Length: 168
Image 1 (tube, rainbow, N blue to C red):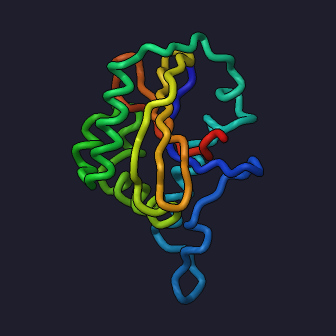
Image 2 (cartoon, rainbow, N blue to C red; image 1 turned 90 degrees about the vertical axis):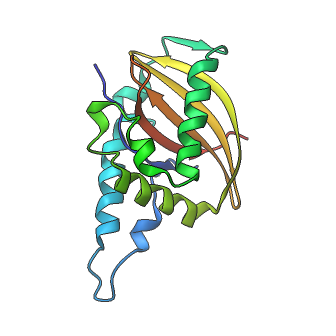
C-alpha cells in the first residue's frame, strides 16, 4: 500500500524545484523555511514521475466525482483564505505531521511567492489510484497556471497535495 503525502513542484524538465533553494540567511546557512520545504519535497518523491507510485496505472478514471471535487475546491479555498488550521483539520491522520497549520501556511506562502496570487480554480478530473482518489484542479496564478492535485484517502480525508505544471 502506498502513502501519498507532501508537496512538490514539478518543472517541465522533470526536475523538482522550489524557491527555498534561494532562501538562505545572511551567513549562508539554510533557514528553517528551506528545511521545511525540503521535508515536503522529500515526502513528495513518492508521487512524481519515475517513482514506483507514479508508475502504477490508474485503477480507473472517472469524470463524475462531484463530491470529492467540491471537497478539493473547498480545501484549496481554505488555503487561499489562509485558514490553515481549518485546512489541517481535514487532513488524514497518516499525513497530519506533514500538514500542520503552520506547515500548510509555510507551503502556501511559498507557492504564492513563486507563482503570485491564486485566481480562478477549475476541477479537471478525478483519478483512482489504489486506495486514493486524486482530484486535479487547474489553478490560475498571476504568473503561471498550475495543476493542483489533492489526494484523498478511502475516508475522503486529504492525504496529499502536489503542484505540477498545467497541461497545455
